[in-house]
Each structure stands twice: as structure tokens, then as C-alpha cells.
Image (cartoon, rainbow, N blue to C red):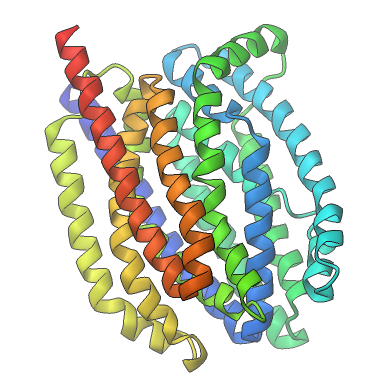
Length: 411
């Protein structure tokens, strides 16, 4: 890798990392606004519905966005990349329709909880934003347009926070109003970013064939793994709602995830920024690995020192337990983020089966833990499960990475 290319990647990492940190701060501000104006039960209801929507959205993509990102990463033809995006937008439209139609089904399954059930119907016109963000995540990695990804990290919060504070202060807040406003803003902004990627809809037939072939070899393998791992990420929020009389613990646990999850951002950003470059490298440069590990450790230590007083200051006493939950979860998220860096390298080389296997191992532990341990130990069981699964995920990916690099050297 020449110095100019390395400088470009370092600049992209810095831009995306700063944007992610800004997104973290604004995400916390958004959650402060939400928790200040909603009761713990109402906030828990919103997060419960959000978990269900994210879970269903994960089921619908079948790996095509991952395959599209890889096709773009391997091609230097910008027109071809735009045609791949066009095919992905067609797929996105279809799955958005499917997600919207699943909301009435969720409504009928929750009729014993009328408030929660109604939120599913209310969310029908704005439930698409997780799918839109997935498209943006994958296409920006495929064509190395980190600016758009950075924009997606911060712009929704910039618009939502002041507008929400004004409206809730003036007219009051309800869970219905919050869903429509926050998710509606996300949806509109993400649509604008998707349009800015300039998808091209010419000759989609030939692109579809390439995309479908790539998905059979690569994307579907990751999809199978994501069914077990990514989808089960939302299982804790669902099981906590099931095993408790109300959704308070759902709110506490998911809020702890919100403030902790960005710890995984730095190594993930490195993997995303280098994704295109990784595809042509025999291994991850040792300098990249060790600098990422060091920055992750420093970030984690700072987080542990600050999180409890920050939570106690920014949130009311009703949410004090969130700081304790987040302290434990922070270690697991840092380990998971480092695993994601190796994940992106393996994905850039089409090692979907390896990533799938790591995801399946992670997901099996999650399914057991988020049911059995949550039933036995409530939120403590969910936290223990998350940390164990993060370690398992990291260990599997490092093993597959070392095996791939060794086989490449021998080959």
C-alpha cells in the first residue's frame, strides 16, 4: 500500500470515526430527549417494537446487499457500480413492502398489549429506515464513499433533536408521536442519501444475474449466519419483554446497548474503510491491527471511567441502572468490534462460509442465553450472554483469519 493511499484511508477513518463519535453523542442526546418526555414503560414499549422491526428486517434481505457491496468493491467501473446499486434499490423496494405488510401481523400477535399493538400499525409508513440504513452501509463500503456513511451517522440526529425537543415541550410526547417523528425523519433523510448514490436502472437484467450468482456463492452464506447471529441480537429485547410484566427492563437494557454499541465502531470503521483495499491484500497490515487494538483499549478505559457519572448526570434517577449495565457490556462490544475488522477482511476475500460459521456459533449461544439465562437471571442473564457471545464471535473470526492467511502463504 503506497503512502498516498494509506493517507487517504487514514483520512477516511478519521472522518468516519469523528462522525461516529458525533453520532454517539447526538444519539445519547436523542435518548435523553426521549426518556425525559416518556415514562419508562412508554420508552420500553417503543424500544420493544423497534427490536421486533429490526428482527423482521434482518430476515428479509437474503444477503443481496452484501453481495452487491462485494461486486462494487471488485469492480473499477463506476457505471457498473451504479447499475448494481439500481438492482439493489429494486430489491430494497420489494423488501420494504414486505416489511410494511408484516406490521399488521405483529399487531394481531400483540393484541393482549393494546398500546404495543397499536405502535406496530402506526409504524407502517416509517418502519423502513433499518433497511435504508443497511443499503447505505453496504453501498458506501462497496464503492468506498465514506462521506455518505458519515452523513447517515449524524444528520438524522441533527434534525431530530431540536425539532423533537420543541414539539414535545410544546405539545407533549407520546410513544406514537415519537415513533412517527423520529423514524419518519430517519426515513426521509436516508431516502435522500440513497438518491445521492445515483443508482442506475439500465440493463438491470445482466446485473441481476451477476448479483444472483455472487449471492449464491457469498451473500447467502452470510445471510444464513446473520439469521442466527444478527437476528438474535434483538432476541434479548423481545425475551425481556416476555419474561417481565412490562417493558421497563427492555428500555433499560436497550438504552445500555445504545450508549455502549459505539465502542465497537472504531475497529468496524477500520474494516469498512479498508474493505476495498483488503480485497487485494494477502493479510491485514500489522500496523493496522495493533493501532486499532490500542485505540480500542484506550476508548474502552475512558468509557469505563466516565459512563456511570455521565448516565447519572444526563438521565434521571429512573435510569441509573443503565450505567451499570453499560459498564459490563462495554468490554464485550470492544471485543466484538475487533472481530468485525477480521470479518470485513474475510468478506472482502469472499470467505462467506467462514463468517457464516462464526455467526452461527455466536447465534447459537445467543439463542440459548437470551432464553434460558434471561428466564433465570433477567437482565443480568442478557448481559452475561452478550459478553460470552462477543468473545466466541471474536475467537472464531481470528481463527478463520489466521487459517486463511496461512493457506494463502502456502498456496
